[in-house]
Amino acid sequence: MSAGGVLMETVRLTGGYEGRKVLDNVSMKVHMGEILVIVGRSGCGKSTLMNHLLGLVKPWSGEVLFEGADIWSDSAALARARRRWGVLFQSGALLGSLTLIENVMLPLEEFTDLSPAFRMSVAMDSLGKVGLDRFADAYPLEVSGGMQKRAGLARAMSLDPDVLFFDEPSAGLDPVTSAGLDDLILTINRLSGTTMVIVTHELPSIFAISDRVVMLDSSTHGIIAEGTAEQLRDSNDDDRVEAFFRRRAPGDDGGQDVS
Amino acid sequence: MDGLLDVEAAAELCALVDSAGPGSDPLLIDLSECTGFETVALAMLVQALMEARNRGADVTTTGAQAELASRIESLTRDAADYRKPAKPGGFRHGMIQIGEKVDSMLMTLKGLAVFASGTFRAVARIRTNPRLLRVRQTLYYMEQAGVDAVPIIAILCWLLGVVLGFQAGYQLKNFAAETFMPDLIAYSMTWEIGPLLAAVMVAGRSGSAFAAELGTMKVRQETDALTVMGMDIWSYLVTPKMLALMVVMPFLVLLADFFGLLGGLLIGGWYLDMPAHVYISRLALVVIPMDIWWGMLKSLVYAVIISNIGCYMGMRVRGGAAEVGRATTSAVVTSIFLVIVADAIISLIFVFIRPTVTV
Image (tube, rainbow over all chains, first blue to last red; front, side, top):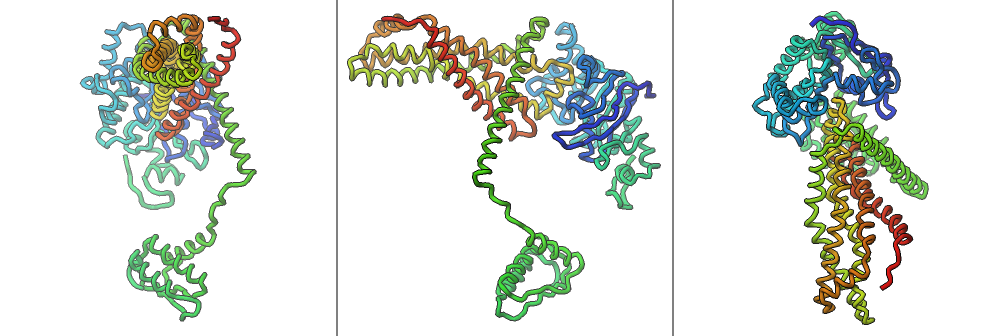
């Protein structure tokens, strides 16, 4: 999907937890329709950046702009933005007391005036897209981790969001399920033009789905590289970037290609 | 030694080293043929060497390869540098601990006040947006906190009525004043024991359940998911619980009063030979409607306290399963503490406003 204008951006974003700085002066842009993948080693601040973007953890300074409005200084802008976002958390974050279909219907109940019959129909359609229509009445704990994530994705998509956020979608999944989820992400992006912001460190997924990659590193608390996955792998002088994309310890000459 | 320095080889060497004393011949351990080592085995050997040297024995190693020599050196250095952590104690430490506890308690109370104000704002939002009144969830929690609590509250209050009636009768008999037993049961049950016992049971059953439910949702990122969906999590997760408790608590108090008085009736007939109609007519003389509805009224305050504390403790969970357990315990302990504080204040007011009944 070709990228359009800037939909979302961070401006000199600095933040962290309880006095521990995780991000320092991070500025980046998310373009309309693109699949932006945020990568980096464990502890580099990927999930923290995601939490700041989603309005869950307040940054120490800087701005998070969605269509030009700072979501952290304008609560109405944050509320408006959230109606247009969908989020897939690492665990799926389905409500354990509701069945899969009830989970998917939740945003429809909350934000639409659809009758129960139509809510059910839309939710079944969403579950069908992720191949879970046969498990509509199952509870989250009765299905596998991969199915929970797909159900989470169905819930995130139920209101046709403009932006979908994914926090480590492949974490804990086997390679086949993970590849299936990557295909699903690509299909949604190609068919509906949904902008995607994905946090991951799974190399095969990065190469399979990303239009653009932003790499964070804990040594600088910020972005150390930006470009396509292939550019970062093949033509980057930074040892940290090369080590990540060639899957080797920094300073080691060995490693392996993943693409 | 030769080959791998494993635990068995180290044990043999340690036995040798342990036998060395201040007057014994110098002991030289040749490690040049050592092809590898296990960390624990090497630590055992280094410990034995250090202890022997401290005893004044002349023990040394020789011929170790670079990596082995480096590990022996680092283990020796780290062991020598180790200082047992100082056991905290003394007046100053005690005062700091008390200060920290008080500070933590004040912070909890402040957080609770902010949280409760959020709950009331969410209730106020229902007026402008009736959709935020979650009828289904409220009914669910009414069943959980109210209907399901009926048997245990009924049995406990009945038993308490029996015990109280027996003890009162036992004492009053000495003064031939057993006819006043119903007065004592009536006042203690309706003023204090009924409302308080119902509150304690609800705090134990429902307050803890609220904290565990919300704590688990926090850990599983479910509350984050609701937040980023743009849902009003106060109205979805907190107000149904508070409203449910506010509806069921007065009825639970009424139930507690009834069964407590029933316990007194039983013991009056069995132990004091007091006919049922005498017991009931005595109750009718001494109990005024205000005794009953005041208890029901103060249970509304308890409902607000218990539901807000349960939800607050659950919502502030950070981390894992252990935190959920701590939140559950804190919810019960803090709820009961604040219910009793509130009860003391309300009872004081009651004593002043209740009209005197002359019999």
